[in-house]
Image (spheres, rainbow, N blue to C red):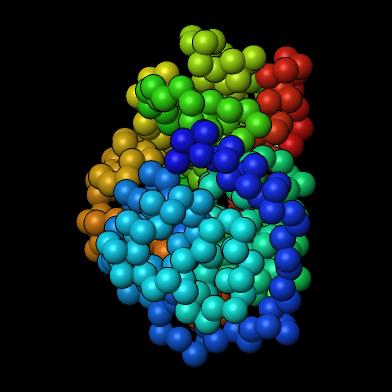
Amino acid sequence: MTLNSRRDILKALALGGAATIFSPNTLLASTSQQKTRLGVALVGLGYYSTDLLAPALQQTKNCYLAGIVTGSPEKAEAWKKKYNIPDKNIYNYQTFDQIANNPDIDVVYVVLPPSMHKEYVVRAANAGKDVWCEKPMAVTVEECQAMIDACRKNKKTLAIGYRLQHEPNTQEYRRIVQKKLLGNVQHVSCAAGYRENRTNHWKQDRAMGGGVLYDMGVYSIQGVRMGSGMEPIAVVSAKTSTTRPEIYKNGLDETVVATLEFPGGVMGDLKTTFGENVNFLNIKCQKGEIKIAPYQAYNGVKGTSPLGEINHPYELHWQQAKQMDNDAMAIMQKKPLIAPGEEGMRDIRIVQAIYKSAASGQRVKI
């Protein structure tokens, strides 16, 4: 969805007035426990929903595409025909809260610009729906906490769309690290980036949550966190830059480099960029090095270690299908989520600390 259409949405929301909030306790009793498949409504029909989530939902076993929320009548009509979505399961941003009355929809998946995540996660939770939210979770830690609180208040789950945490090769290198099969981790480095040539996307708009650190940067942060098996205690140093100030204006970050400090003096170096293609994770351990490349691709994640190749075949072609199936099963079985809201908030806390370090030139505790 283009920047202009996003702004049209926001303008329409403002003209529409405050959203009516429904209580799930009075309007809709949850029936997800009795279901064998959960109905998912995608909120926002941009590239990620269109090219990845919707196709993945055609392969899932535990959930299916039940509805959509879009500000584009043209998209609504096209999706209705392509996926046979009934009219009653199609919403726009003004009618969104009526989703509370629809038993076909169990989960609302928020796939909007980061600046809109808090509003729609809170509204979905207040409508009595479990919620999945794309990364980055939100723009601030305070927004993340509000999202967590809203879901907790309504007794609904909140999962963040960290597909890699469901990915088998990612799980394998994490197992090696967690079990210390190569001894203690000594150093981690991770880079995630690509050449972003769009000029009017939300990624180039600070007010909408733009900048590389919120987008690809979360992959690099996840890489050093998962690669070390620990949580960082400080940002030692950080620097933001751009080679295209006509696109990344007023100091908006096209590239970020940072060093994080972990317990025991372990350091993690990360790079993220919209200026070049980079994609690797290196984990130096006492007994050798784990190398993952590509580290965060939509398919083909693989690596090597002194213990052998890390290259598990995918049962499903789409990482997103495994992610959504796992999250749906966790909801139905009332088991812990792999990547709950608290996981997303950890990354946003680090994002904010990196920005603070870059601005001050100082070490920042996390």
